[in-house]
Amino acid sequence: EQVRGRPKRQVNLASVMPPLPTLEVAREAAREARAAFEEPANKLKMEQIQLQCQGDISKFFQLCIPTASEILNGVLSKYGFQLTQNGCVDFTQELSKFVADPEICELEKELKQRFMPTIYPNPA
Image 1 (cartoon, rainbow, N blue to C red):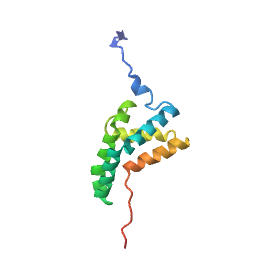
Image 2: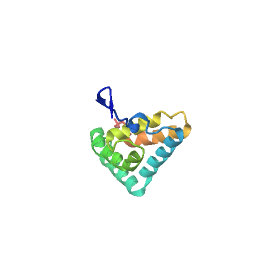
Image 3: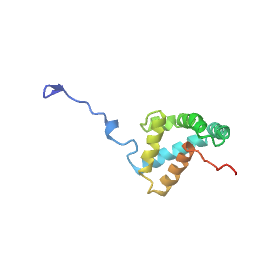
Image 4: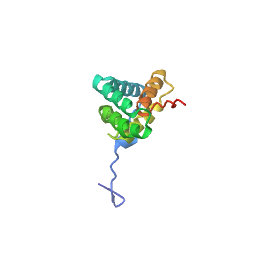
């Protein structure tokens, strides 16, 4: 079909509608993300990586973030986010739109901690 001599544009609803359109959907997605990290195999992977990194931020970003992204692939896919590290960032940013809700606020903080290293000062 044509409009004004040009092909009619197809609208991709996924690009128009937010991936987490309601508070309840955001809660469900955040709960699923937390559950993915709490699965025993995933929890062990993340703990081993954190031990390997021992405060080395560059090592953290090389090892931890790709693993965390991999762990979240099922959740990202289900809710329409890219299966990339940027998809993980987009997911947490989308959750942050709902931080007025106490449950979302807590879950969003937990998820961000999975991606951001805990840096302890070196003893002098």
